[in-house]
Image (tube, rainbow, N blue to C red; front, side):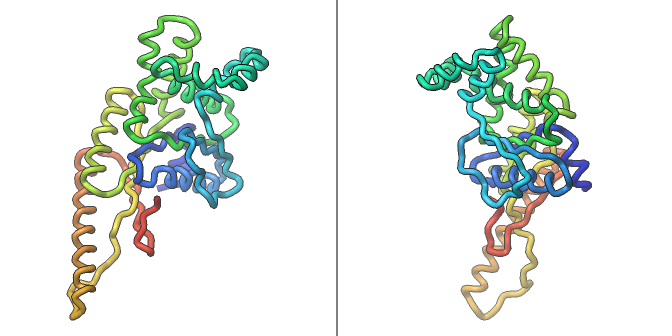
Length: 265
């Protein structure tokens, strides 16, 4: 796979997956790889987590909150003084989360604004857990239907246009190679692509145990037990990969477990 071609296929790449599958580290690794092939890259964090350390200093980073996105919107209307007063009073964050879906619309609106500037070749979004990602992506559709006019309606339409354009936005799902998280990923993927209409990129399977093992046991019972555990785990991983291949016809990026037997998470 041509790394530069793959990473430049869309200007926004939203990385999503269950908690604990290594989603944030995969997002950071993609940002690092994109920078390494010469793409001007922005890594956006929207959950307020501690940032991944050790990234190339050329990778630009930005944390987005609904309150900050709303304040930026006020600033764009020439209402900077008002937004600063509301921020100081703690009102902006309250307003940003008052109506269902408004906080998600503000986050996506900020991402859309960043994408439209053309300042970056690639914007990688460290998205929320898979279930919350569905809510995030559904928000503009719900608000477009609920609000028939005004800036919210217009913003929702503009975001939907971005989400529907594969040259502008895709979602990359991350999972560990176990049957339960892979099954959940498949359900989430179909909902994102078929019901919401956002294109999917390759699926990342993080932490695959594919290291060669001795074919025969030894006289050491503890070692035999460890080998049996590893063989069983490898069989589970093979079954999960086969299920994903059968049910979800997308390219797969398979990341091995590290030498210290930890996955990239």
